Amino acid sequence: MPLVETSSPDQYICYAYPLTTEEDIYVLSSLTEADKSLAHHVTTGVCEEPTFTGTTWDCTKSQGHTCKGDAVNFGLWDEFSNAKDNGAFKLPEGVSLRLGPRTNLKYFLIQVHFMNPVETPRMSAANVTLEFTTNP
Image (cartoon, rainbow, N blue to C red; front, side, top):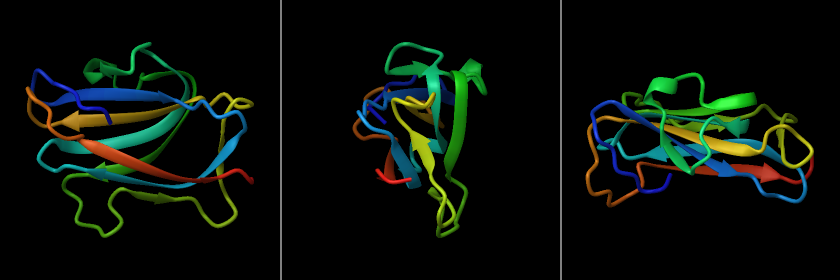
């Protein structure tokens, strides 16, 4: 997640990253790590097209409507979870999620629920690592 400023408590900021691979890729797992001093929770997913054309946007009022067309949500990190696998998402053995130019899923999306306003960002509120392969 890029560094962002927020202006009010309980603000949601979305970030869409275009998947510009020349070949399809297959996601196997994701790991979301977040800063508890900044974020309540973080959700991730992929979609056909974000509802906003910029890189980041305030999506507080568009909960559940951050994408146009096809979308798949996966991955969740929660401030209140003490689980060892908080933020970890792994598809079952032999299963993958196909993304890329020959699919409708062309954007990776991160949604961060910020607790308090962030006037001078010094660190990213969330980082996501995807594990993928080029083989289905």
